[in-house]
Image (cartoon, rainbow, N blue to C red; front, top):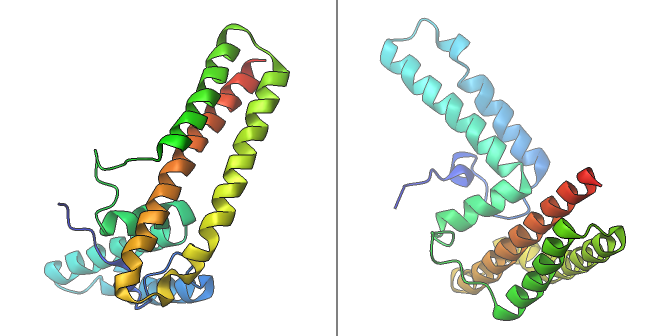
Length: 180
């Protein structure tokens, strides 16, 4: 398994799905100043290389942790929950998505704005239900005891995978809308 750097430890922040944005920015800017290559121009080649590595790590950490979707994928990956072939999704959700995908395929051959609007509405409803159900888990995650985090992470992984399915349907709808 590829070793993923611990961005939270790098910023001295707790692992959380809802980091305090101001604290994240403060850590990023402080480390940006500290590890900016221009401030180490007279250092040895080895020190310059280390500074460049830390500056890159800082940029990657901030880019990842400041984006909710990237942050979620990052945390799940760090816990080994986004490995290929281990992404089972509940069958009832797959059936709903399959029905939506069938309606999208029909739109390919028989464009109908009313059907597209109905599919979009169903996706919006599913998305709203997903968001409502996961919010307490996301906002309370950092306060959980270590043994309670595993089931929470499983719930979050299921949410993340479902959200990706719905995003693909939205992308297909957008392509349909662009053509009609």
